[in-house]
Image 1 (tube, rainbow, N blue to C red):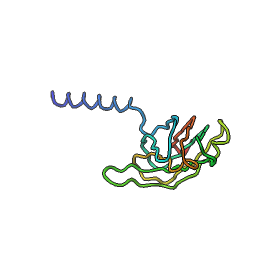
Image 2: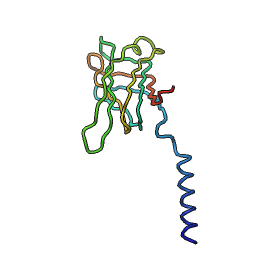
Image 3: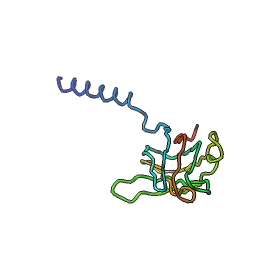
Length: 137
């Protein structure tokens, strides 16, 4: 009887912890400062859809006001899988204009985006980076 009570209490504690744990699939936002080609974002859990938005972009020492962004699936102990490169330009036009791209039908896993190219080279800043992984939004 003592063992079943301990098991019940442990089960309730585990359920409580899970109920109050942050949602692993929640959207997130951040900024980027002084990033060049090869910059990697933080990782997030994904089940099928991701949209990456940049707002308020600037580039240092570049006439070409654009950046290429690619989403990658982080795979432990193997090369990561990449999913479609997208070119962002609108966010360089004003501080309130968004560039955004989406990736669909992604397998469940851990993901990140990588800045593959920044203008003609150099560094970029982004006032707001927003990752949305809910297709319904």
